Length: 377
Image (cartoon, rainbow, N blue to C red; front, side):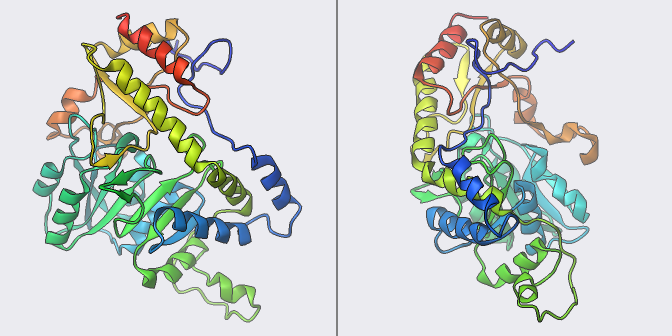
């Protein structure tokens, strides 16, 4: 029997995640339902324009059905081919690395940094071979990676650089918003992200010459604009996918954009309260705290502790959910199983724990979680 069954909101429970549905979402979706366009239509285009203006005005934004769709498109646009290698994090959602398996590309895993759980730039440098074609980073929990070092390595070896920013909407690195810093950046709008479209994603593309190809790949390889003119010549010359976003999803995204600033600020205030609550407390370390050169998007609050299961049990006794959420990818058979060479991950894999952080919480909830933790386990 599962010792930690899912809690439901209410009755004094503090759940680990909760979707944020904006106040205007129902009306926005109803307008779409009453319109001509339910699938991909004008609201998708509007969402793309507004999102690009928010995070990267000099990049193009392509809305898709999921963050995984966006990553796969990025890997295709990067020209990755069977036999190529890509350096990617060992610690991430499997969505970062599974598209490589679609393509016959080999993910080469990089170890984590002990105090951020982001990929370690020093380890990345040791992994480059003549077959390496790109580096993919993940901003774990919403804290940007050491982009200067990673970008420098990519430039030195002529590699494309791709950011999995599924956690990092609202993050910034040295004063610049994540989304406009690399060749490709993916954002996720999955149900429990800062901004949700139910499920969905956005791909930011630096090279404008790739945008039309990206649009074709998003829609079966078809030039959709030409087809809608009614004079499209019925040929497809490249394999495409059904990766488009719908206007129903985009309506949710547009409503979320209206509340974006306040949603982000609240999450950041909750994370700051955790930082204050655990300051100086022995036996617990909050991952990603204390950086002054980058802005944390506050998607996750992750701590390092000893006896993780004991703390989970103590929290659950007080009706507070917690969990691991992500796992090292080399534990999965699809990636070949357990590998050696991840000294930091080996030390940390039994110590990290994600605590509740979402818009349904308030500062009193954070104080309650901190109080339970500080009482010992």
